[in-house]
Amino acid sequence: MSFAGGSPVTGVSLEITISYLNAARANEELEIESRILSIGETTRCVTVEIRNKATGEVISHGRHTKYLAIVSSKL
Image (cartoon, rainbow, N blue to C red; front, side, top):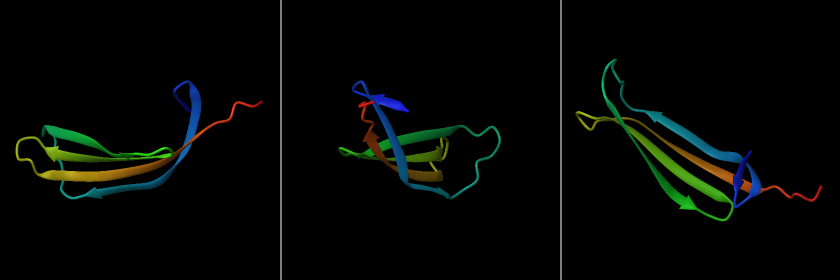
């Protein structure tokens, strides 16, 4: 469980995708770039791309969409 603005937050993944496009070899230097696609009231969506640093060739990319709900503290 994490906290957002002091309130406990829990959530569930709505979508997780990973596409493996090429192989990474031992000792190759990789570059990882992530981007926030959207931040809504209850959902967040991010992407990540992994590339060979020397050639720029994309090794894999992924996407994660998550629903977040603030937990009521009325106990």
